[in-house]
Image 1 (tube, rainbow, N blue to C red):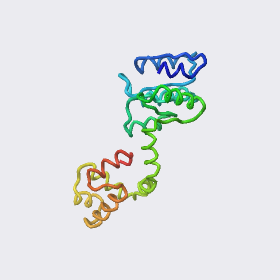
Image 2 (cartoon, rainbow, N blue to C red):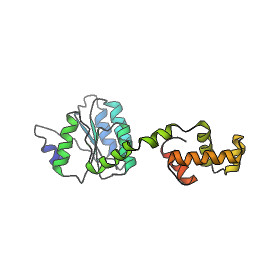
Image 3 (cartoon, rainbow, N blue to C red):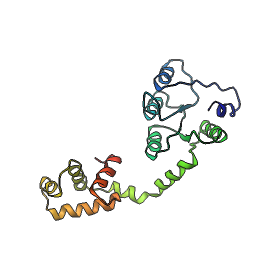
Image 4 (tube, rainbow, N blue to C red):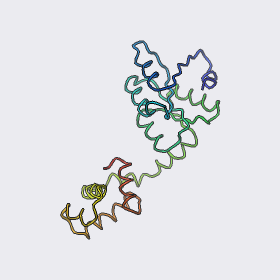
Length: 195
């Protein structure tokens, strides 16, 4: 990282911290001046996602770039949602990292090519996202009952609907959530924050 920062040219100073608490203390100082925050996701004391969120809250104008070995899709999305403006992997070349730093400073949103593939795939899944937004109140209610371990019959009784209606809702849920089992439906709904 230091080598990548040197490649930017100019007279940059890097303040490095071994853990999130030290970095946040530094940023909380009244005279803290930061041009760019580089945050790892896998920190020893606090979640990197939490750090991104806190930096964004305290310094809303400071561009934040995640630099991590973690390439899990969920982490990438969580970091972006928390306020990261870029996400690069530590095993990218020094030149690629330096270019990403420069892009971030110029107001762009760089992302490692390995991660871009996932984001494009996600953006292309518009139909599924639309379907998720179209879950009916009854389908959401049924998902909640299933997530509590109720059977179809128990859920139907709680909802005052026939078992055949429960089965219709189940078929619609499987289609809309793009799943093939009750466990997958509940997991997908939980991942998307629906229940």
